[in-house]
Length: 492
Image 1 (cartoon, rainbow, N blue to C red):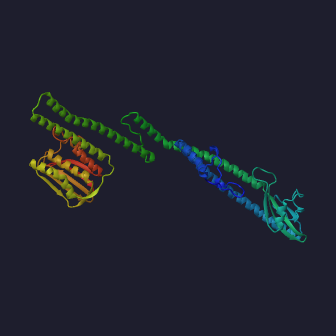
Image 2: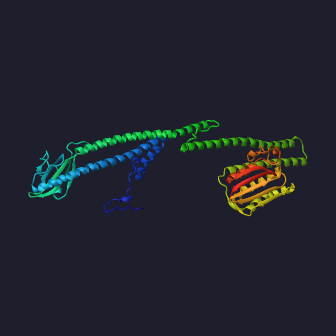
Image 3: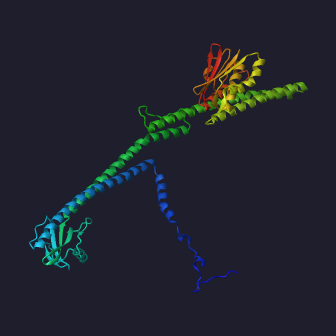
């Protein structure tokens, strides 16, 4: 059983006393949270304001700080100059009055609006050039401080609010024949205070007008700068509503941030429209290409089911179905490869030997060339290149396969690497590409009319072009004197 320990006075130690329950509303909040909360709310409120309002507020706050600083500097300079003048007048009058007290002569005349008093160390007025001569200008504490040899300076009255009979006084101790005296000199600050009040009024008026003008100019400038952005927004909203062939009206005689934004949006719209066109064409071509093997499959199955077939006939039907299924698989794989290339920002480059790269790509086609009685020659430089072999190998294979399938005569493959550029060129000795086919040779499902009924899906050259683009290179097809030529340039 636990034992409670008490102090000698019978009290439970503080650490063991139960803490009283504190209502949630009185719970202590960390100081950092209390300090950060208003700033966070202010930033959130400021971020919800429109852009023009935020710009105007920023201009107004900045101009307020600048104008306040400039007004403060001007006021300080003028006040310093006026105070220095008062100080010089007081010093000169103090010196002449001190001399008069020491020699016992009559006090000399002081500057305009000046007055004096001569006090003993007890604070009694011994001589005065002040209408209220019966009342000392210094407090007892100031009299004692001056009597100890300190110089006392003080202003009587305030600048704002306006008070009558404002003075600036100075007191010093003077030793004369009659004993120690405290000589007080003062000058009226009326003209100085009036000048400062007038300066404050003028600075406030000028600052207020300048702030209003700057805010108005900032508002008009912000509206003018953002007006094209609003116009672009309306155009984009029109496009979102289904408008076609929309382009933003961008001035051609300007080159600023807004016009560059407009040109960028127009280029984006061009790419979106081209992408939509390619998508529609891709869907149409893919539907056509997929329909053909599926129709053949359906026909083969219908014929096989129409009447009893022999084992040889069923085997032949299955071989035909297998060929069409393989065609569908090849078509699907080609579409997936194109999609992967189009969605990859950067290919994975590695250093590989060019001769080995070309040899790996050509090896599967050597038997095909031998069966058709055609020659396949390869010339590859003995060097290394920095490419993604996973994509370049099938691209070279597609070029060689197309030349063997659609061309005639000898197929030549040359691979060179000079000045960081890998050039792959495949030529044959056939009839070449139809002239009308050349502009769209690298489009998906693009095939010459003569090859529509032959093998292939029309994706081979499209795959080659996608590989070249992914590497930052180009692909080009042309007809040479001896047949067709396809050239691929890849940075390596």
